[in-house]
Image (cartoon, rainbow, N blue to C red; front, side):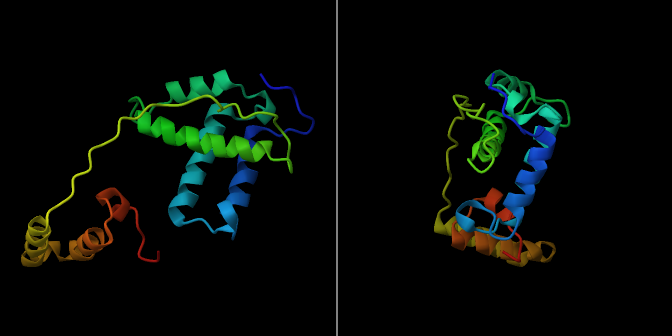
Length: 173
């Protein structure tokens, strides 16, 4: 448990401030402006922080509380989260609590996420051969109902994107 800091706000208030600061123009790491996906991810993190810790002050959140929250978290359908999702959520929580720890705020002395980790088995990447790419592009061109998929395929193949990365792109980006 952390030593109580004067003026430490609730997680709800701090999370809203963190979101506003991080999603502002040039508010990202290194003075960058966050992408739409990063902004969405930060918004989700705020939701998870509020659900887990609500109006508890940021300096009252312990290592054990974060660990319990991440281990017990479930999907909307009631199923357990994957280890990858837990790991991603932990990364976001770490960023939030590091922000709280920053000397500008000094609301906490140590990050309650420190020492937590979730093991994720690496996935095998399958690289398509040139003839496979040619076959898929030809099939998409021949099927008039699938013409809309062509830009997605071309971008993915020639930029070397994973399907999940290509799916998350916005044309504005």
